[in-house]
Length: 220
Image 1 (cartoon, helix red, strand yellow):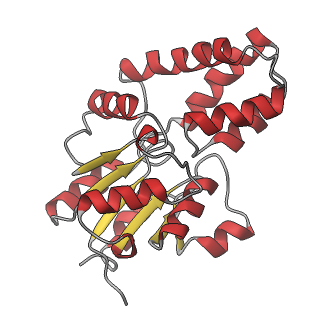
Image 2: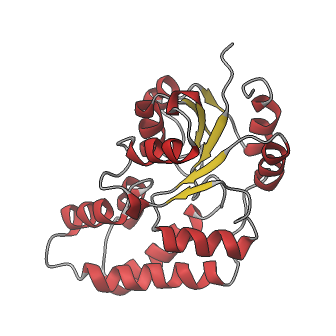
């Protein structure tokens, strides 16, 4: 069995149990601005950067929709909770990070969220010291499902993406990790894996607790 020498984490839905919270913020904002079927639109945006999120919203609601005002309302609600340290950390996340750090495994975080917000959320949760490299969605021109953010994270770690394990929850994230050539572990959050995901991911595990149990077989 091939052994891997670095691990790259997604953040929302993997480290933080934040996607349900973000969905609720969007639902509340949608009530203000009259956006119908918001749950479906938000699901299609999971794992993509802000630029592509805006494109998806415009396709769904048209150019006349007050997107900037909606976005400010939804993200403002979410940011307030994040700054107050209210983002719940996923079960097993800190134990897994501590274990990998003890093993001296290089760690990166690759999130579609803007870098500034990533750093703020990690610091609020006391998780900012675990990662050797942090890449945000504003650091690459192409969003997931393109592999650019994972390739950048691997490059900054000084390793090949093919020698990395990538832990993702979203469909777009799994697609990007597969395109990067990494070993892909999917830990589903809101969106449950379909046949495509079952083919694209090397492992599908219910939580980071199981990842911690399995990963000893995969790392150097």
